[in-house]
Length: 315
Image 1 (cartoon, rainbow, N blue to C red):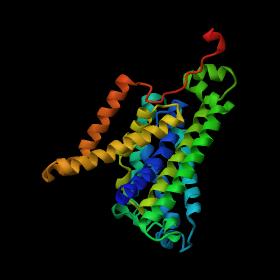
Image 2: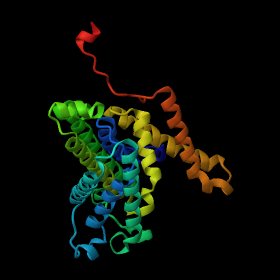
Image 3: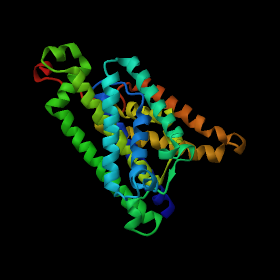
Image 4: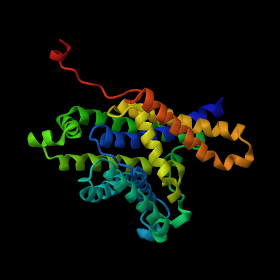
Protein backbone atom coordinates (compact mmCIF):
# COMPACT_ATOMS: atom_id res chain seq x y z
CA UNK A 1 0.00 0.00 0.00
CA UNK A 2 2.78 2.38 0.92
CA UNK A 3 4.54 1.57 -2.34
CA UNK A 4 1.38 2.39 -4.30
CA UNK A 5 0.98 5.74 -2.53
CA UNK A 6 4.65 6.54 -3.12
CA UNK A 7 4.25 5.78 -6.82
CA UNK A 8 1.09 7.92 -6.97
CA UNK A 9 3.01 10.84 -5.47
CA UNK A 10 5.78 10.37 -8.04
CA UNK A 11 3.20 10.14 -10.83
CA UNK A 12 1.44 13.35 -9.77
CA UNK A 13 4.70 15.28 -9.55
CA UNK A 14 5.70 14.45 -13.12
CA UNK A 15 2.15 14.86 -14.46
CA UNK A 16 1.77 18.33 -12.92
CA UNK A 17 5.20 19.36 -14.22
CA UNK A 18 4.05 18.36 -17.70
CA UNK A 19 0.76 20.18 -17.07
CA UNK A 20 2.63 23.47 -16.66
CA UNK A 21 4.17 23.01 -20.12
CA UNK A 22 0.80 22.01 -21.57
CA UNK A 23 -0.75 25.18 -20.14
CA UNK A 24 1.97 27.19 -21.86
CA UNK A 25 1.28 25.44 -25.16
CA UNK A 26 -2.45 25.98 -24.66
CA UNK A 27 -1.88 29.72 -24.39
CA UNK A 28 0.03 29.64 -27.68
CA UNK A 29 -2.07 27.21 -29.71
CA UNK A 30 -5.43 27.03 -27.99
CA UNK A 31 -5.97 30.75 -27.46
CA UNK A 32 -3.68 32.34 -30.06
CA UNK A 33 -3.36 29.78 -32.85
CA UNK A 34 0.45 29.54 -32.77
CA UNK A 35 1.73 26.17 -33.98
CA UNK A 36 4.80 25.75 -31.76
CA UNK A 37 6.45 22.43 -32.66
CA UNK A 38 9.57 23.25 -30.64
CA UNK A 39 8.27 22.69 -27.10
CA UNK A 40 11.15 20.39 -26.18
CA UNK A 41 13.67 23.12 -27.00
CA UNK A 42 12.20 25.57 -24.50
CA UNK A 43 11.95 22.85 -21.88
CA UNK A 44 15.67 22.23 -22.45
CA UNK A 45 16.53 25.92 -22.03
CA UNK A 46 14.69 26.04 -18.72
CA UNK A 47 16.17 22.76 -17.54
CA UNK A 48 19.78 23.65 -18.34
CA UNK A 49 19.43 27.14 -16.93
CA UNK A 50 18.20 25.61 -13.69
CA UNK A 51 21.05 23.10 -13.65
CA UNK A 52 23.71 25.71 -14.39
CA UNK A 53 22.46 28.21 -11.82
CA UNK A 54 21.97 25.80 -8.93
CA UNK A 55 24.03 22.68 -9.69
CA UNK A 56 27.73 21.81 -9.40
CA UNK A 57 28.41 23.25 -12.86
CA UNK A 58 28.07 26.73 -11.34
CA UNK A 59 31.62 26.33 -10.00
CA UNK A 60 32.96 26.40 -13.55
CA UNK A 61 30.44 28.72 -15.16
CA UNK A 62 29.54 31.15 -12.35
CA UNK A 63 32.69 31.14 -10.27
CA UNK A 64 31.35 28.98 -7.47
CA UNK A 65 28.44 31.15 -6.37
CA UNK A 66 25.62 29.04 -5.00
CA UNK A 67 22.18 30.25 -6.02
CA UNK A 68 18.91 29.18 -4.38
CA UNK A 69 16.27 27.05 -6.01
CA UNK A 70 13.84 29.95 -6.45
CA UNK A 71 16.47 31.91 -8.37
CA UNK A 72 16.95 28.89 -10.61
CA UNK A 73 13.22 28.80 -11.38
CA UNK A 74 13.14 32.52 -12.12
CA UNK A 75 16.30 32.29 -14.23
CA UNK A 76 14.84 29.39 -16.22
CA UNK A 77 11.70 31.39 -17.01
CA UNK A 78 13.69 34.48 -18.00
CA UNK A 79 16.11 32.51 -20.18
CA UNK A 80 13.27 30.73 -21.98
CA UNK A 81 11.39 33.99 -22.36
CA UNK A 82 14.41 35.77 -23.81
CA UNK A 83 15.05 32.92 -26.26
CA UNK A 84 11.37 33.01 -27.24
CA UNK A 85 11.56 36.77 -27.80
CA UNK A 86 14.54 36.44 -30.13
CA UNK A 87 13.07 33.44 -31.95
CA UNK A 88 9.62 35.01 -32.12
CA UNK A 89 10.89 38.20 -33.70
CA UNK A 90 12.33 36.07 -36.48
CA UNK A 91 9.64 33.43 -36.97
CA UNK A 92 6.23 34.70 -35.88
CA UNK A 93 5.45 36.29 -39.22
CA UNK A 94 5.27 32.74 -40.53
CA UNK A 95 1.95 30.92 -40.46
CA UNK A 96 0.68 27.42 -39.70
CA UNK A 97 2.94 24.65 -40.99
CA UNK A 98 5.75 27.10 -41.84
CA UNK A 99 5.90 28.22 -38.20
CA UNK A 100 5.76 24.56 -37.10
CA UNK A 101 8.75 23.66 -39.28
CA UNK A 102 10.72 26.68 -38.08
CA UNK A 103 10.11 26.01 -34.38
CA UNK A 104 10.82 22.30 -34.80
CA UNK A 105 14.16 23.11 -36.43
CA UNK A 106 15.00 25.51 -33.61
CA UNK A 107 14.24 22.84 -31.00
CA UNK A 108 16.52 20.36 -32.77
CA UNK A 109 19.23 23.04 -32.90
CA UNK A 110 18.89 23.68 -29.15
CA UNK A 111 19.20 19.96 -28.44
CA UNK A 112 22.34 19.75 -30.59
CA UNK A 113 23.83 22.74 -28.77
CA UNK A 114 23.22 20.91 -25.49
CA UNK A 115 25.04 17.87 -26.89
CA UNK A 116 28.08 19.77 -28.19
CA UNK A 117 28.60 22.66 -25.73
CA UNK A 118 30.28 20.37 -23.22
CA UNK A 119 31.88 23.10 -21.08
CA UNK A 120 28.45 24.41 -20.05
CA UNK A 121 26.03 21.51 -20.59
CA UNK A 122 28.21 18.49 -19.90
CA UNK A 123 27.63 17.19 -23.42
CA UNK A 124 26.16 13.73 -23.76
CA UNK A 125 26.91 13.00 -20.09
CA UNK A 126 24.66 15.81 -18.93
CA UNK A 127 24.76 17.50 -15.52
CA UNK A 128 24.21 15.76 -12.19
CA UNK A 129 23.61 16.59 -8.52
CA UNK A 130 21.08 19.32 -9.20
CA UNK A 131 19.76 20.27 -5.75
CA UNK A 132 16.20 19.51 -4.72
CA UNK A 133 14.98 21.87 -1.94
CA UNK A 134 12.87 19.14 -0.35
CA UNK A 135 16.00 17.23 0.62
CA UNK A 136 16.89 19.95 3.11
CA UNK A 137 13.43 19.84 4.68
CA UNK A 138 12.83 16.12 5.22
CA UNK A 139 14.56 12.77 5.49
CA UNK A 140 13.64 9.89 3.23
CA UNK A 141 12.49 9.94 -0.40
CA UNK A 142 8.77 9.62 0.38
CA UNK A 143 8.64 12.68 2.63
CA UNK A 144 10.82 14.61 0.20
CA UNK A 145 8.54 13.73 -2.70
CA UNK A 146 5.48 14.85 -0.71
CA UNK A 147 7.09 18.25 -0.15
CA UNK A 148 8.06 18.54 -3.81
CA UNK A 149 4.54 17.54 -4.83
CA UNK A 150 3.16 20.35 -2.68
CA UNK A 151 5.57 22.80 -4.32
CA UNK A 152 4.70 21.68 -7.84
CA UNK A 153 0.96 21.66 -7.07
CA UNK A 154 1.12 25.22 -5.74
CA UNK A 155 3.05 26.46 -8.77
CA UNK A 156 0.77 24.63 -11.21
CA UNK A 157 -2.24 26.08 -9.38
CA UNK A 158 -0.83 29.59 -9.59
CA UNK A 159 -0.15 29.15 -13.31
CA UNK A 160 -3.69 27.86 -13.84
CA UNK A 161 -5.34 30.71 -11.93
CA UNK A 162 -3.12 33.30 -13.59
CA UNK A 163 -3.92 32.02 -17.08
CA UNK A 164 -7.64 31.85 -16.29
CA UNK A 165 -7.55 35.51 -15.32
CA UNK A 166 -5.49 36.43 -18.36
CA UNK A 167 -7.69 34.71 -20.93
CA UNK A 168 -10.79 36.15 -19.30
CA UNK A 169 -9.39 39.68 -19.41
CA UNK A 170 -9.44 42.00 -22.45
CA UNK A 171 -6.00 40.78 -23.51
CA UNK A 172 -7.31 37.22 -23.62
CA UNK A 173 -10.17 38.29 -25.86
CA UNK A 174 -7.64 39.95 -28.16
CA UNK A 175 -5.75 36.63 -28.34
CA UNK A 176 -8.88 34.85 -29.52
CA UNK A 177 -9.64 37.64 -31.99
CA UNK A 178 -6.16 37.30 -33.50
CA UNK A 179 -6.59 33.51 -33.63
CA UNK A 180 -9.91 33.78 -35.46
CA UNK A 181 -9.18 36.64 -37.87
CA UNK A 182 -6.02 38.71 -37.75
CA UNK A 183 -7.28 41.12 -40.39
CA UNK A 184 -10.41 41.90 -38.40
CA UNK A 185 -8.36 42.33 -35.21
CA UNK A 186 -5.98 44.70 -36.99
CA UNK A 187 -8.92 46.73 -38.33
CA UNK A 188 -9.94 47.33 -34.71
CA UNK A 189 -6.55 48.84 -33.88
CA UNK A 190 -4.85 45.72 -32.48
CA UNK A 191 -1.33 44.70 -33.43
CA UNK A 192 -1.49 40.97 -34.28
CA UNK A 193 2.28 40.53 -34.49
CA UNK A 194 2.85 42.04 -31.05
CA UNK A 195 -0.01 40.01 -29.52
CA UNK A 196 1.31 36.79 -31.03
CA UNK A 197 4.80 37.58 -29.75
CA UNK A 198 3.53 38.28 -26.22
CA UNK A 199 1.62 34.98 -26.12
CA UNK A 200 4.62 33.11 -27.55
CA UNK A 201 7.01 34.53 -24.95
CA UNK A 202 4.69 33.91 -22.00
CA UNK A 203 3.94 30.35 -23.13
CA UNK A 204 7.64 29.57 -23.54
CA UNK A 205 8.38 30.98 -20.08
CA UNK A 206 5.96 28.42 -18.66
CA UNK A 207 7.70 25.69 -20.66
CA UNK A 208 11.01 26.85 -19.16
CA UNK A 209 9.46 26.67 -15.67
CA UNK A 210 8.32 23.12 -16.42
CA UNK A 211 11.80 22.10 -17.53
CA UNK A 212 13.34 23.62 -14.38
CA UNK A 213 10.89 21.82 -12.10
CA UNK A 214 11.62 18.55 -13.87
CA UNK A 215 15.39 18.65 -13.40
CA UNK A 216 14.96 19.93 -9.85
CA UNK A 217 12.99 16.78 -9.11
CA UNK A 218 15.08 14.27 -11.07
CA UNK A 219 18.42 15.83 -10.10
CA UNK A 220 19.92 15.18 -13.53
CA UNK A 221 19.64 16.68 -16.99
CA UNK A 222 20.73 15.28 -20.34
CA UNK A 223 20.18 16.44 -23.92
CA UNK A 224 18.42 13.13 -24.56
CA UNK A 225 15.65 14.18 -22.17
CA UNK A 226 14.46 16.67 -24.80
CA UNK A 227 14.05 14.71 -27.99
CA UNK A 228 11.12 15.44 -30.36
CA UNK A 229 9.04 12.73 -28.66
CA UNK A 230 8.61 15.12 -25.72
CA UNK A 231 6.99 17.70 -27.99
CA UNK A 232 4.73 14.95 -29.34
CA UNK A 233 3.72 13.95 -25.79
CA UNK A 234 2.84 17.49 -24.77
CA UNK A 235 0.87 18.17 -27.95
CA UNK A 236 -1.05 14.92 -27.40
CA UNK A 237 -1.84 15.95 -23.83
CA UNK A 238 -3.30 19.22 -25.07
CA UNK A 239 -5.33 17.68 -27.89
CA UNK A 240 -6.72 14.86 -25.74
CA UNK A 241 -7.64 17.18 -22.89
CA UNK A 242 -8.99 19.94 -25.10
CA UNK A 243 -7.29 23.06 -26.42
CA UNK A 244 -8.41 26.57 -25.42
CA UNK A 245 -9.49 25.17 -22.07
CA UNK A 246 -7.00 25.25 -19.19
CA UNK A 247 -8.86 22.54 -17.28
CA UNK A 248 -8.65 20.35 -20.36
CA UNK A 249 -4.90 20.96 -20.57
CA UNK A 250 -4.39 19.67 -17.03
CA UNK A 251 -6.74 16.72 -17.57
CA UNK A 252 -4.92 15.77 -20.76
CA UNK A 253 -1.57 15.84 -18.98
CA UNK A 254 -2.87 13.48 -16.29
CA UNK A 255 -4.50 11.05 -18.75
CA UNK A 256 -1.69 10.82 -21.30
CA UNK A 257 1.01 10.50 -18.64
CA UNK A 258 -1.05 7.76 -16.96
CA UNK A 259 -1.31 5.91 -20.28
CA UNK A 260 2.41 6.37 -20.97
CA UNK A 261 3.56 5.09 -17.57
CA UNK A 262 0.88 2.39 -17.38
CA UNK A 263 1.75 1.03 -20.82
CA UNK A 264 5.41 0.97 -19.85
CA UNK A 265 4.58 -1.18 -16.83
CA UNK A 266 2.39 -3.53 -18.87
CA UNK A 267 5.03 -3.88 -21.57
CA UNK A 268 7.68 -4.72 -18.96
CA UNK A 269 5.46 -7.53 -17.64
CA UNK A 270 4.00 -8.99 -20.83
CA UNK A 271 6.55 -8.37 -23.58
CA UNK A 272 9.48 -10.81 -23.86
CA UNK A 273 12.80 -9.32 -22.67
CA UNK A 274 14.30 -9.78 -26.14
CA UNK A 275 12.04 -7.06 -27.59
CA UNK A 276 11.67 -4.76 -24.58
CA UNK A 277 14.29 -2.48 -26.09
CA UNK A 278 11.52 -1.34 -28.45
CA UNK A 279 9.15 -0.53 -25.57
CA UNK A 280 9.55 3.20 -26.13
CA UNK A 281 8.40 2.82 -29.73
CA UNK A 282 5.43 0.73 -28.57
CA UNK A 283 4.42 3.45 -26.12
CA UNK A 284 4.71 6.11 -28.82
CA UNK A 285 2.48 4.05 -31.12
CA UNK A 286 -0.11 3.69 -28.35
CA UNK A 287 -0.11 7.44 -27.69
CA UNK A 288 -0.44 8.01 -31.43
CA UNK A 289 -3.48 5.74 -31.53
CA UNK A 290 -5.06 7.65 -28.65
CA UNK A 291 -4.43 10.89 -30.52
CA UNK A 292 -6.06 9.54 -33.70
CA UNK A 293 -9.11 8.24 -31.80
CA UNK A 294 -9.48 11.58 -30.04
CA UNK A 295 -9.34 13.50 -33.30
CA UNK A 296 -11.92 11.17 -34.85
CA UNK A 297 -14.48 11.06 -32.06
CA UNK A 298 -13.71 14.09 -29.85
CA UNK A 299 -11.96 16.61 -32.13
CA UNK A 300 -12.35 19.35 -29.50
CA UNK A 301 -10.86 17.09 -26.81
CA UNK A 302 -12.42 15.75 -23.64
CA UNK A 303 -13.00 19.26 -22.31
CA UNK A 304 -12.97 21.53 -25.32
CA UNK A 305 -13.26 25.27 -25.60
CA UNK A 306 -16.35 26.81 -24.14
CA UNK A 307 -18.31 28.36 -26.98
CA UNK A 308 -19.75 31.68 -25.95
CA UNK A 309 -23.36 32.12 -27.04
CA UNK A 310 -24.98 35.50 -26.77
CA UNK A 311 -28.41 35.97 -25.23
CA UNK A 312 -29.81 37.15 -28.56
CA UNK A 313 -28.48 34.03 -30.31
CA UNK A 314 -30.17 31.80 -27.72
CA UNK A 315 -33.40 33.65 -28.18
